[in-house]
Image (cartoon, rainbow, N blue to C red; front, top):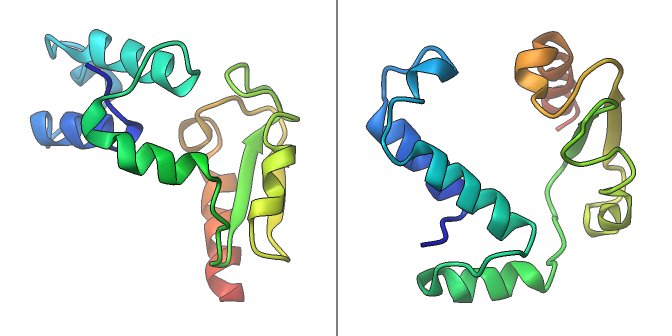
Length: 127
């Protein structure tokens, strides 16, 4: 069964409400299957859950993001290379800032929490 990212996060949070460390999640019997399925679906190598087909169709139409936004990207992200999201920036509201965080990879909140906090504070201050 295919599961969207939000559902993966919700499932993990519901099953492990007291998780303080990613290592606490690993004992879940379906953790690996859920994560692998999410990556396969995200990269269009596996079909999604039919239940979410209407939502997937809406997202596939690439609706514009109309709220103030800030895009963060690690310059060492091996999952989504730095240039990958550039074509999609046109979907964001004019004035959206894109910050590339030096020395960070795919997991910015863990790798550079200060950069993430600073970015959030600047976005909140501007809105």
